[in-house]
Length: 310
Image 1 (cartoon, one colour):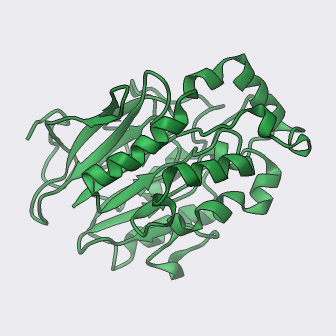
Image 2 (cartoon, rainbow, N blue to C red):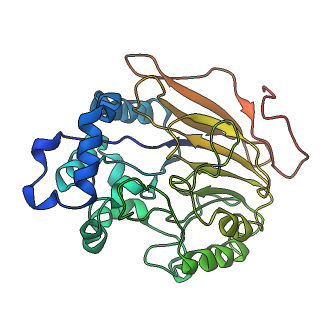
């Protein structure tokens, strides 16, 4: 089995494409940040998003997992562009997606369910009876001993300097129930959400930028004894172990941020073989995946070294 994980494409079409009625509120501050220089980091995002589709064709993964921030300011034009650039992935049964904070940037965006309008097929679940909050938690069961379980940690922050996340209590309860469900318990679990549990150096994220109820998430995820935590939000690609989670954290950073582009590719040769991970990097023309694979630690067979090459 093979899994491709990417995040934070931040597709933007420029400020002129934003209707005047959409400017009041936080989007005005976001537009100012783009003008101030943030936008230049994602100036080539469209070409890199197209390259993700090329990478999918090359690798032929069984699943493609996206941990959000497909857009910069969650406008209709950006969502339409993101869908078009990533075609045919948004409607592919292999695609699983959870929104980022930029995808739910304003209150009207959330009220309209704009993310769901454009990426509803990526929010399919194999266990609909376990949903406790809209589409969440989302559960996919691609094999006999693998599960993908996603929750939505993103929210609209009214204050422009805040970009923190919080997982609603109903989803925390639903996650705990899902992980203890007979069809999920005992599987290797890829836990998906937008917010990272730490920074690249292992330090906690700030109160204004990080996941406010991380401890609640990790407590709900305690039934996982074999798994990986997949995320984005922090625009650095990294992997590390953290206290409170049995598996390993894989942050895909951003697939399009200039100079930091990256993706993760997970492989397993057979049901009795361990999962391995390889990082993908941008070459200027496309994404190149490392030749050597490193075993994923936390697979119920002792604390393997994350740098162990196989």
